[in-house]
Amino acid sequence: MLNFPRWKIILISLLCLFGILFAMPNFVSQQTLDNFPGWLPTQKIALGLDLQGGSHMLLEVDVGALVEERLENLQDDVRTVLRRDRIRYTGLSASEKSVTFRLSDQANEARAIELLEALAQPITNSLFALPGSSSSLDIEVEAEGDGRISVILTDEGILARRTSAVQQSIEIVRRRVDEMGTREPSIQRQGTDRILVQVPGLQDPQQLRDMLGTTAKLTFHLVDVTVSTDDILRGRAPPGTIILPMVDNPAALVAIRRRAMVSGENLIDAQPSFNQNGLPAVTIRFDITGSRQFGRATAENVGRPFAIVLDDEVISAPVINEPIPGGRAIISGGFTVQGANDLAILLRAGALPAPLTILEERSVGPDLGADSVAAGKNAAIIGLLAVVVFIILTYGRFGVAANLALMINIALLMAALSILGATLTLPGIAGIVLTIGMAVDANVLVFERIREETRAGRAPLAAVDMGYTQALSTILDANITTLIAALILFQFGAGPIKGFAVTLAIGIITSVFTAVTVTRLIITIWLRRTRPETLTL
Image (cartoon, rainbow, N blue to C red; front, top):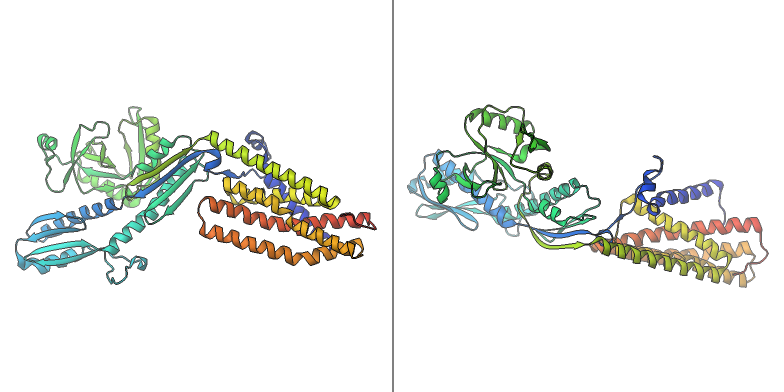
């Protein structure tokens, strides 16, 4: 146990040195860190929401809006396919989960059902299959007799849309938060349709609320010029036409065709800019498919006004003076510079598939976070000093070696957290403080075993060798069981519990390394150089 080849001494020394280098950025100011040479590590441990303040938000995906949107599109599709085949009908309406109508001529029932079944969208993911259900389509067509037909959304289809919407919303929320320049946001799914967002360091919760509460669904529609001003004011619009307010003047209403001529789904870039009048605007760029659609739509409707719609509000309604090829356009709508920048962020991140409802919102001030950091530091310093003093008073020179290894252990722990990009929270600090107390536990086992061997009359080298040999299995058993508990906490815990589990697990690994290897190396070097005749423990 006391045999250390030169290569092993070099390897242990390099590992300890790297640990100190990677831990060092956490103990210097940012200004000092900026002056470090490029080859030195500069990554710090990120502080969690409870340590540096920030915003906490619990969001819920509006599943009802998803169903309503699908029903609206389905209603338009039913109207289109029946008119195209010249099948007359009456009473087309949408209810909670279905679209119903009555055929004027019941002889067309078979043909109508055939056309409507073609509107179904397949559900390819078997994860959405419900017990006892064999359907793999999102709609079912039922003939209820007397020419009445219902197109019903299946439970599988609704479940698939909800699951997909939550997954897509998490990704889009992550993009939006990352675009804001915040560091280490925590974005997690909770339950079936909820998303937990924690953004440490964000001092403007209103900005986060505005950013996440906006769907950012951008579409381009033709303006329905056949609707009179009087009908618009009365809210009367023909089928296939909707009336929306202007974003800068809600009293001004515009009648537009319900079906979009171009959707923002093909948008690949959006940047804040200025229009020809020097006012803030947003320049957008489509992909190849979107460019082709936008160019064709503008070419076919030269001289007609079209509306740029964002989240059911008309940003502007210019006239198409000429075709717009190339897939580039400028959106102007009375923006401020900050408003144009925020809109560009939203459009780059993509539109949310459904609105998000804020169920819970909390803000943690930086002062409270600073108090938590100070309390954590004080606890760690007091705990460290207590351990250092106790171990020296109890074990003398051996205690000095254990304390040196303890300092290296803390450096390795901080280095590991920095390299992994871990976010440190209050429970994480508790894990570090606990690690400080546990770090010398293995040394205590070894030193007590050495005492027993010394009392039995063994020579110093033999006593130390037997001490480490006999205590090793006990050390490994104790730390492996604790490590298993930490892994279980990480697997089944959430949020702060995981933070505690991470610091505890890393602390266990570094503690075993420093106690079994580093302390043993220090003691071995001292023994071989001084060769004492007796040991005093």
